[in-house]
Length: 144
Image (cartoon, rainbow, N blue to C red; front, side):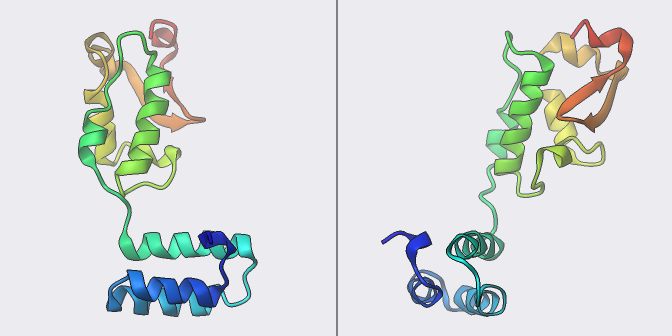
């Protein structure tokens, strides 16, 4: 039987065997209040969301710091790949648009991962995140 085919009672019973007592108490109160009348699809999504909140995201900063631009990769391709890695492993952002917020630590890690020629051009870049691409100043946009 797969998780998304289970009833709320069955999921709750299964989680009582898997989670610690305090985790289970948090889980049980969340599912009781949020998922009492949920459809099977909503139940699955809700359970996963609640478990993520209880257990926390899988954080692996080495995956992020080791995500560097490949020689044949454009800045845009690297940026998309970096953002996907950061969303998956940082634990601090939930979507790609948040990754390159210039107030966060991920911008520095992203810039450190650029190939040397592109890193030298950083003072000329507009680091505003928009439409899943880095907006470059017009005179550098065609070079990178």
